Image (cartoon, rainbow, N blue to C red; front, side, top):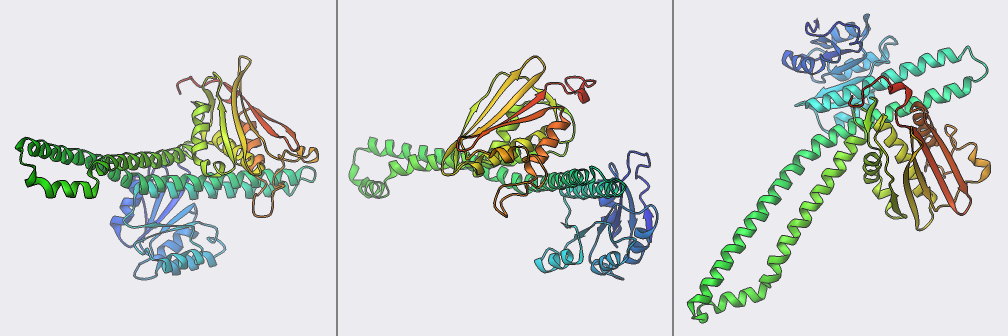
Length: 436
């Protein structure tokens, strides 16, 4: 039986329709409660009803499908959805208590877009639903663009390439946002437990050492050291003085390591924040530092990083998109260096209304014949498997959307410098208050 979620918003801003299929009413109720603020939710309590509803107008944009159902299991429902030309395009996320590799592989082979394991977690559900809806919207946009481009002769190929690049960017950022949400949930909680336990352990050790010291003082006051000869021998055997000092140092290093992991997770969340397409006031220095933390492993074996930060104000921007620009330029700089070299990041103010970020490397440089093509989609000089040729094209598009521009100066054998100039207040954001 199909049901409409009575609490689902019907206003035009809620355009995405999600079909929740589960034979358990409580599971449908929980999922509907999570999604109804951002989606229109419809329900089906069996496979047959799901197939009917999926083919009806308006069609769902996404299906959350249980596997273990009495009349028709989720695998059979998915197979029929994929066999029907009317429903084969609808993405399906399995929501199931089955978590073994065999069932997951069977689902992906059948065409499932993702898995959510029961018991469900709100942050995981929302992140994965958002990722699939954004990817579907991007695919539909590409499809519409392709239909339009069929009637174009001149400039058609370039417009198609741009649409494909934007699709890849949207899906990449959606996947990264999903990854960040999962990392935040799966790692931050145990990190908190370990950090708290290490703090308690340090306090306990301090107390134990204090007790040992009190015993030592009592033994010294007793006067008859022969009673404590065995204890003193054991103390020398285990090198108690070193053990005490090293135990506290090990705890300090462990807590520093936990703080490092926590910072990496937070930086990854910041890099791919769900609100990354919102214009806001942000510090470019914080974004660059966050990105450096993420790409640290890519840089540390080939180069040292020098930061020459100037006095620049916050700018109105989409921070996570600019972070993608910094990542692309930094990774390219590292790949351009053979052996050991230096990457220099410089920021400065340009006039009254702009700022500039320059990223220089001491790498191989770019031949003059390639300089005019490096921002073309899919153009790359890297070996096969090393790059897609999309990084600089994506960066160019992002900077253009910020009403900025990229310049490059390069000398073969000496290195390259990419300069990104951005307006402090782009025209698109002039009507927004500074604190928005």
